[in-house]
Image (tube, rainbow, N blue to C red; front, side, top):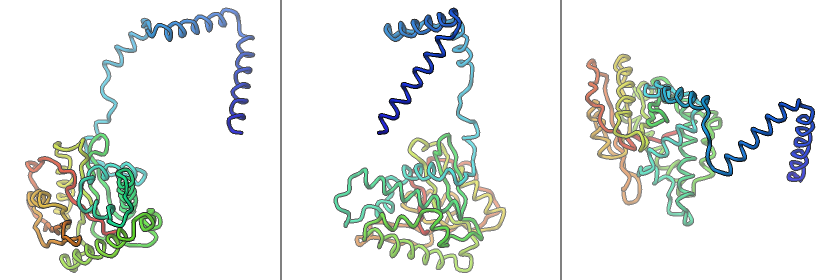
Length: 307
């Protein structure tokens, strides 16, 4: 029925256009005919003859600068409408992250394809990104969301059922397998929550909490993550606030030590203890971090999913 209706509409449009052309002056109709013949010849020969006007246009275009905004190389606080772009960027940044795989690739999944695991990974990042746009701050740098920093600032609260509903995070429970739900809701989330409270104590809600800091493969080795991290460090130092994070690998732990973070405690997940997270804290300092720490960016610099 749709095809028939569409075809009928196209026929009416054609007849209407034909009627209008027939009433045009002869010189205008001839002009349309000549233009049509030229177009047909170009299609037949596969070549296009450039006119003087097109040459001028080409010269004009060649003199213009790139269309990529220059401010994309500056830090930019993102709005919630960009949560899907953020989620996709973080999905690529954490594609090889052990904790991410531990959450989505549970043993009770029935022979999941690579595409199915990737979709679940992206969906999880989408819900989490949406959630933290309501409760935190998301900053990016690079022309195409190359590097993302996701923070919960002092005084901001992470929990709330209404935020869970608005962000779509509730959908995750229906997408994870039974073991996946156990890992996420019974193991990871409460463990990280207890760990942070035990380390920070009364300052638990009065610190800068790094949720994610990740750089896509296309943005690595450019110092993007370092710039994002230094920016928030300077703000925390001005306010006299501590900073807290969980590092997802030993190499990342070494990376953070360059910025003044101290290792506090390790926590392992999995029956074989294959997934390691290291809790780290940075106390406020008077001296700003030097720009010399703008080295390479790793794919997964920090991770935490305590939503």
